[in-house]
Image 1: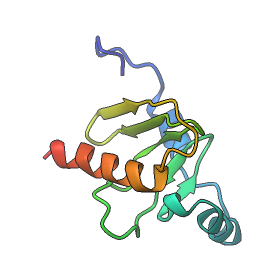
Image 2: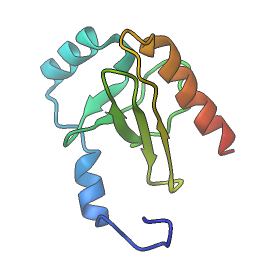
Image 3: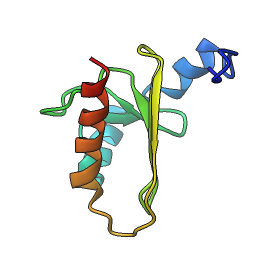
Length: 110
C-alpha cells in the first residue's frame, strides 16, 4: 500500500513474492551459504521467513531484501508494516546487526 492507502501490488503478487521457491536440498544449501538467513527461504527475488530461527520475533511470511553493502528491507503484510534500513559498508556484520534490527522492529509493533 502507498502512504495514501492505494494498493500498489495485488495481494496475489505479494503472496507470490513471499512464497518459498527453494526445494529442500536448495534450502539446505541456502542456509549453509548464508548463515544469517537460517529460517528463511527465497521467494520471487526476496527472502521469506519460514520460521525456525531461534530467538526471532519475525512472523511467518514476512519478506524482504538485504543488500551486499548494508541495505535491509522488511515487509510484513499481516501487520501492514515495513522497514527500510541502509548503511554503506561492506563486511557490515550483517549476521549480528540484521537479526537484532528485525527483532527490535517487530518488538516495537506490539
